[in-house]
Length: 160
Image (cartoon, rainbow, N blue to C red; front, side, top):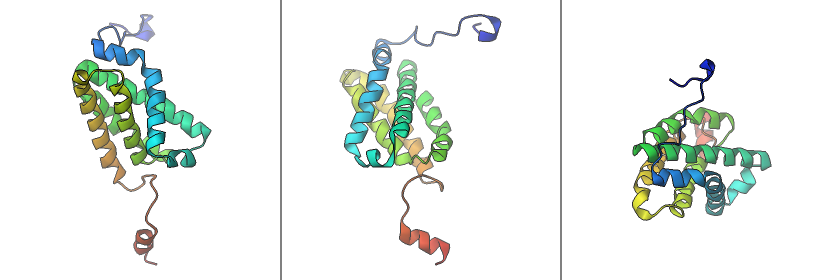
């Protein structure tokens, strides 16, 4: 059993990767940057809403999303991506990042990975991204999301 407190090396998470997952893992940093560029092209208002530090955090988070997609490709199951997308919304709520922005980034990751993998290997990527989008969509409907609110509805809810 590999455990750091016993002085043993950590478990190698990339040794048993499939060829498709290994190809994506080798280009994960480049793919994260490209995915963020695609997201900025899709939604130019991201540049206005986030400063330089927030954009760097989004780039770091995009790399983490790519890692979970790699785990899903390796397992041939979208469960790792789904569980990650289920656990992360509270952190994004604290940072006032709307779930719609994360959905845009996830779909941009799919397009970025599509440039690296052949179409036949994109089945697991599509399943992982759709699992993440489904979870982010569900969390986006809950109160406290960072999206811009409708002023008229807010006035009605306050009773003004």
